[in-house]
Length: 245
Image 1 (cartoon, rainbow, N blue to C red):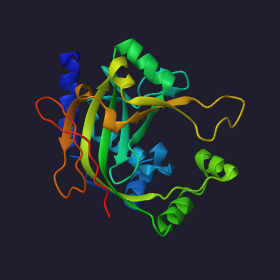
Image 2 (image 1 turned 90 degrees about the vertical axis):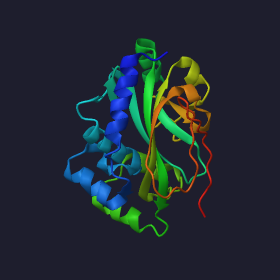
Image 3 (image 1 turned 45 degrees about the vertical axis):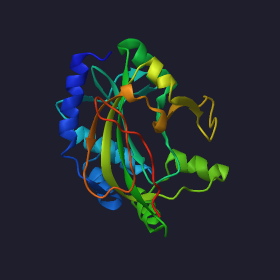
């Protein structure tokens, strides 16, 4: 059972999260990160980077950014337990989020009994005509490791996201038992690109997250294109997507 101090800390985070912007426009969000010298502004998957940026801004004073290091990786933040920040598109055919690597999560749970994920869910718009990709690539002026590996292996470029409408933030705490119910292991799709093996990452199916793991949820009211529902406390919610047309 979670200690009261963790539950109280999560409630502070939930209250602080209500001040986050509801609409994230890709160009504006990336330029905001760049102007603030946020190191991850060049990332192709800018949603996760921007959510981390917002968490650093709005959770300041509640949670310590840059969590504990295990091996070559570290969690995004630490307060009572290790935390990672993830953003996920509702209007997609995938229900999986890629969490941290196996070593980091295993050690975090071993040391503190739990590890946490703060998960933002919302609807996205996609870059159908590739104008956003061209703009972002020009702004970055360099090719990231992911893009280099993708090009060298002939993998098709994924359609990038141009905007995100925040609808829910879930504060989730896993122990070994609850994590086992919804996770698998993901090996980097590009395989070994050097002398070291790529780390194995934990992949979580958000449809299978146990109700008991969801400590709190912040709902952002407005236009909703799907029913995203967990059960937590006395409120019953169950994830169910209605894909937009």
